[in-house]
Length: 185
Image (cartoon, rainbow, N blue to C red; front, side, top):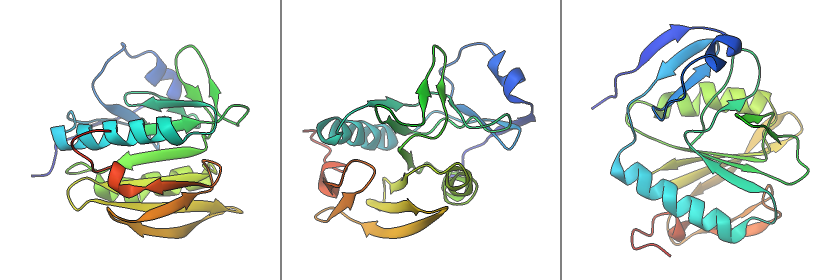
């Protein structure tokens, strides 16, 4: 089943005037997109990924949706997970994150995979986010892209039982099995 989305055109200024909400929504290319809540499987993978990152992160802070990430006047995505390195380009304000963080993680939901793979991929690449992970909670894989220069390079597709080294996290080894561990850490 594909999720139904509501869309409406606006600017970052208009977006900032919306009431505070826990409803997933984001501004992409000037279009407000309101999404349904994520599934329990999506939430579980999100929680496991946050717990894994908390154990691995060299410094900085981890945020998870809903959190606004201001990239420009037409783009305020709400990534599933964001890691902001201490002293990095992303600033933490009172109401949102501002500027490109070191790591963005998107977890696919019905109806979001295409946008995560294309529009969001191009957006975070254009804003030079150091690393972009796309996680498929049903097929159980993590697809990883690393920024080199001004373009993403494909690091690989990793399944449970496999590991990869994350340059954004200080070259730590990520055990993909921990992302799909439904029993928790």
